[in-house]
Length: 144
Image 1 (cartoon, rainbow, N blue to C red):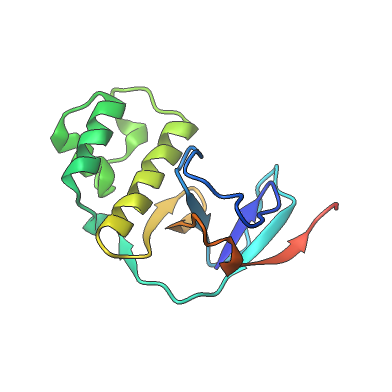
Image 2: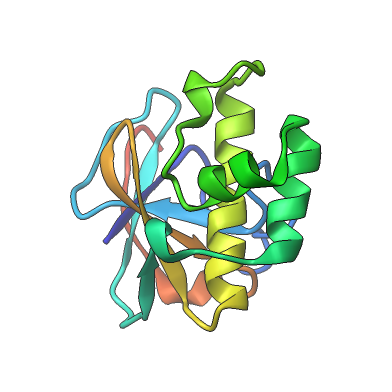
């Protein structure tokens, strides 16, 4: 799997303060982001859960508070049966990434390594990578 990054990822550079927590997003194909100058290969075996199988009451409550919606909608946002872009509340890219980070966090709480989801790139694997930078192999640096 591949992760495209605007910055080089080094030991200790992943933390929980990103918009998606410590989650990185991976694809089966190298994809292009405008701000990206390098990509990484992740070859480790991992146990992945589909977004449709996610459930955690605490995370559902966090989502309800974040989007100011009821628990039923929050649960549907977590398991991706509802799309955050098609709701009455305002959603932007950061809100969507935050929600995807919650899916990755939920997968770990449920005993998995990450979550398989869908986004504008197609199938995406959301994997919390805090302290796991050494599992990433730098494949290419473009322009330096």
